[in-house]
Length: 179
Image: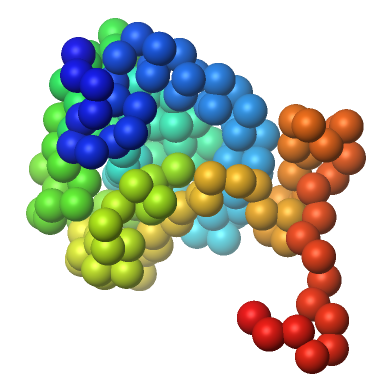
């Protein structure tokens, strides 16, 4: 295992995999709510959901269980993480080693392209998002979660560790505030 796969600060070591497992546990409730809202709005199940930067597969399995895609594909540039993910993959969930900044993806057009905790690790997020949009089936969507839950998301306020179980709140804009 390497210390910094493709510039990812935490690498793909065993401690990095454990760290991603902890993050998956902490962010599972708001991510589940976010994905459930996507599934509700999408209506019909998608044929293919693609999870970008899947790491050891936690988010991919969450996408599969919530969205109900016929097939879910996790992509990550780390062979070590993909091997971990494949070891626990349920039916209909697959993984591949692929640099998610490179299109085309090794799949047909997707009904959902999802990324969690990913954009902050990319050198040019707007260009990458535009490239990802080319990998979508007509009329379908890309969805992503930032590194911290959004208290204004329709899923409701997130409860953050270190906030005493209180909902996290973004300060409301005041007259004269600049955005």
